[in-house]
Image (cartoon, helix red, strand yellow):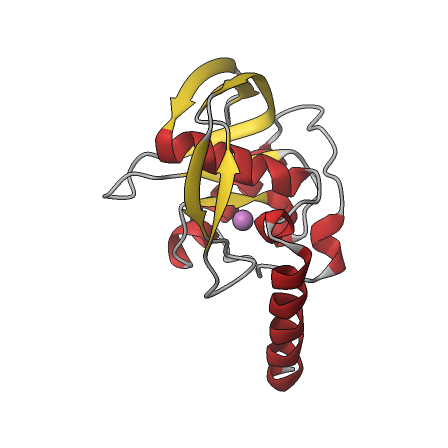
Length: 167
Ligand code: NI
């Protein structure tokens, strides 16, 4: 296994749209394992392949207290969404920044697992938020894009400055 570098907003590669996985091969399973290790090490509760510069529709999530409930979503699709939830979100690609985003409160999702088996899942609460947040990454969208243009401009300027100093 390997830790993968995580892209940081506003890196333009975070805007790439991920392609569907044609078949869940050994390479895809290795990607899943590396993504899980990277997520746990960060630490975070979710990671999309886009964030590690792999533009395939793969997500890993673990919202459990003991980090022993890894959920893998390959080619995820939202089948239905209902309700509204306002939740404070953070992102491994926007370190140190948290803000509230409105999302659907409940979603039904269909995906493939790491064995290539199709499953459907009803999610609510943090899991529903996480699924929507990570699926946004797969279409090139970072949660800060839901903020007002002014807030986002301020944040982007701050992050660019920080990245210049670090680089
Ligand atoms: Ni994120």
